[in-house]
Image 1: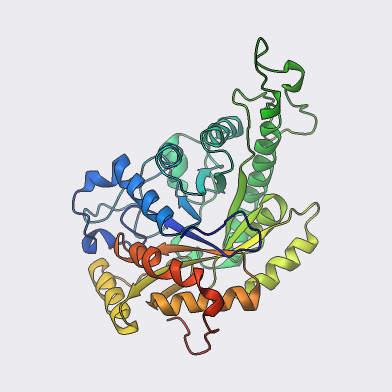
Image 2: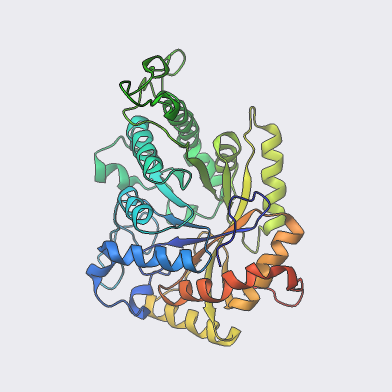
Length: 387
């Protein structure tokens, strides 16, 4: 059963698709055995169709300018990990054209690209799937990205910096300020060729409605437009914000939606309080929906899930410690915890990152989504705290 994702009061469930899963060793335990399959359009179409039929509200697609690595920013030569990904704009076009998924959230790098190209790409997707496209601007903190694309050298985060908010702030402050200007420029460009300008009959468009931007005061990104693509439906902007001042400011200033990353040290209520305070201090802050971003390892029982995670960590050779909370347990307990988050904290939704495809994504679609559909009859769980 599909939920009505147009209802602003609904709790929306998203699935973050990435290779054969988010755990670095997912390839070794996945039932996918042909590496080429991950780069096949049917692989993504099948996931889009499964997500749609299972009641998933949105899918997110990742971007990356350099090959994935086990340690952030450190190149490696391992051969038993998924490396490489399809361009998310192309993948999104496939999903929009071949499935009825309600929304595709497309990550696009803003540090080593130009606003006009990204604005045109997202506008093109929005023309293919009006109202079904969102954009996640991605700030590059990996110095390898600049080398890969021949861009300007940027500050970088070291592996030990990734989970320390003060280091994120110190090293990436200017990049996040640039990202805010970048997103504003893209939004302005979307207004240069409005869908309302299109006509019919002898007239193709109302030419007076299509015009370049005034560039006064826009020195960082002086794109004037107009776009070459009519914007039939303006895409939403979603920001993934780790617990640090700069990403929260970016989200408050320009995002329609923010994905926050809870942890033991920074649980949901702490993150919500911090983000709300930053919203109050941000001039012209946009109205922002708040979603939790959680990695998941699921099993028939809690013990089974723990065993699966132990096997994945053993295969990887290290303990998986991603940039957000890892829920380890049953789908039923996960659903109860999500209901609790919604009822206690008023979250608008959640994005789940399955550790392994298809295993964990199948459980999300088969077990978690239906449980959230019937969440009105689920008791608020006090006994099920995530691992």
